[in-house]
Image (tube, rainbow, N blue to C red; front, side, top):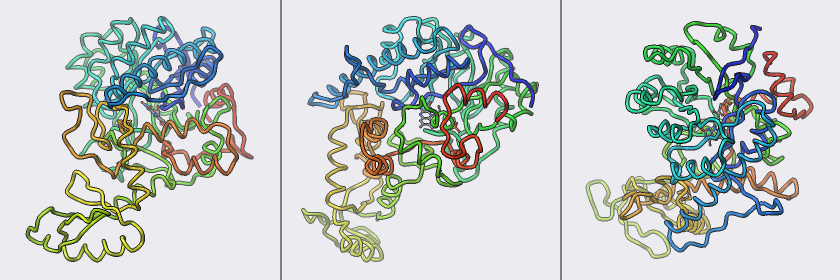
Length: 475
Ligand SMILES: Cc1cc2nc3c(=O)[nH]c(=O)nc-3n(C[C@H](O)[C@H](O)[C@H](O)COP(=O)(O)O)c2cc1C
Ligand code: SF4
């Protein structure tokens, strides 16, 4: 195993090991602080982070506003307070070691306002900003305003090229690194383009070499690339070290740090990680952001998949092969189906999936009355956590504040489920398992390795320091 040397990041030489940002409340001040204390870079998630009252009690994020816009205002306040609180915690734990970065999502609601509010409220505590999910052209300007480094997250050389040419070239001196996030392997949302096949993963090596070529063409030889997605044992990456085609390289971990003592995720989630097999984590396209994402196959994903399977095309009036009249739902609305589809619909209705919900694609999905009530309730409770949302049709752009598309019941409220799973609280084991099974569990496709890696034998959960030390020896 080649030696792993420090690299200068955000103004300091640190271990080239990074805990990737994970929302909601998965990479926190505690996890990031410990990662920095171990000599690397800890990343707090600035996506609706938790804040606390004077006594240190968690402030529940409750919404009182009547409109979605009012609620979004409340959400922005919670998010800013939460980001500041987590930055302070991380700073205190890090005790001056390592670096603390903040991660946010470009397509989150009021992204710029939230990150600006956090940087204003936590001056000097955050040294770098990482941002992906979308094309964060303005990231460099925000970083420049606060004199911090910035780290765009991209999944191709082409994306970086576009960002550089349009805006980053004007703030080259603060570009701290470029995160290459493998769109087939990394946990969370993924940057697969329309031409890339989710079922045909490409190897990261040649894609990162391409990225390096583009960066070097712009005189960015001294800027590190941060490899994220599918990184487990560094000994498997030794041909990436001291390799002129790759250049300066650091490694970001998202999935491995989930299973540490300091990781704030519920115990049931940690236990689930230890049981995963190959294929249990896969890419799906249910997210209300419209991006692909990588998550654990559980009841939550199965329910979404089944919703989409119980789907037929329809028309409001008779048209071509849509010539079979059918009445759906309690209000018995008339729709026209293809003859062959009516049989399927009758079977679903008999099985209790008697409510038909419209999608933006002129299709109906069939769900139980209880599921329908929940979907409509979740849509109505929307507090605008995204810049635009496929599930509720919220858009933060006026004058209508909607996407102009019908809400899509094949998706879900990501805010609700990520908040639920990261705030399980004091519950018994069975309830913990139920909550974890019925909510979205983001994870990288290498998560099955927990079960096979001897480091975790007999359910061993390391501290962050132990994990970082282990990674440093190549394991
Ligand atoms: C639970 C979870 C949540 C994540 N949330 C975010 C996020 O909010 N923003 C982001 O940029 N990346 C997010 N990621 C991606 C990680 O920061 C990291 O880049 C990725 O997980 C690395 O790949 P790995 O999972 O194979 O280690 C998340 C990953 C996981 C596992
Ligand atoms: S419905 Fe969409 S925008 Fe609204 S809170 Fe949920 S995920 Fe966020």
